[in-house]
Image (cartoon, rainbow, N blue to C red; front, side, top):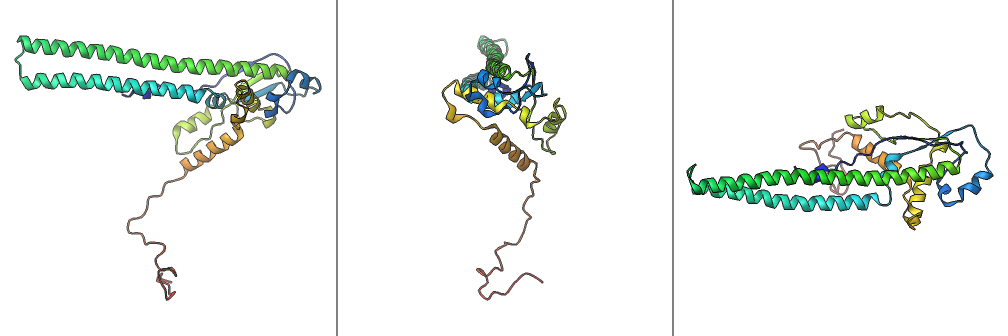
Length: 263
């Protein structure tokens, strides 16, 4: 099994509670303003909650892709190393079989001992490497999540929001049971768009790194994901064997202009 398959990119949902009140219409421009000064001129509204899409904030975090890429490259490097070690062990087994040493002889026992030792070390090192990769992936997710959480707290306190809840903008495909199950497990069924402060959080994450021009537009990203899910759900119609070329009988292929299609 390839080590790259041992890197679960699982992004989980959570609910964050933060004390205070709420202001209306938090949007993407919130990250670029002085929130304390801005909220002073805004009267409180009856809402006491806001929502964020934790999954997308992690997925499009400015550091997430590069850190995951580094982990994937490490996994691929380890794959090559273990593949070479496995080939060496298989070659030793082939050599033992080719010599046809009798069990109990020194030559036979030496080969068996060497192959057994190498196999044991291989299994131990493989499990250790798998564990390290999974742990490193967890560390990446943890550190990114904690930064997102901190930025949520800053924005929420600035706008005097009492509670921030997580939602997942899942575009389920009816022919994909896992996506449908994920859709049904959502805790938040509906919300007013005015409560979504995800873009404000995303803006802050990129501004901290001086990369404002690279900021991901979550609305655009969601629309793209929705279209991809729609295409994935569309039935794939295989071509019919022996189908007539649609251009046959057209004016280009039929100078007389007469139709060969039965009327």
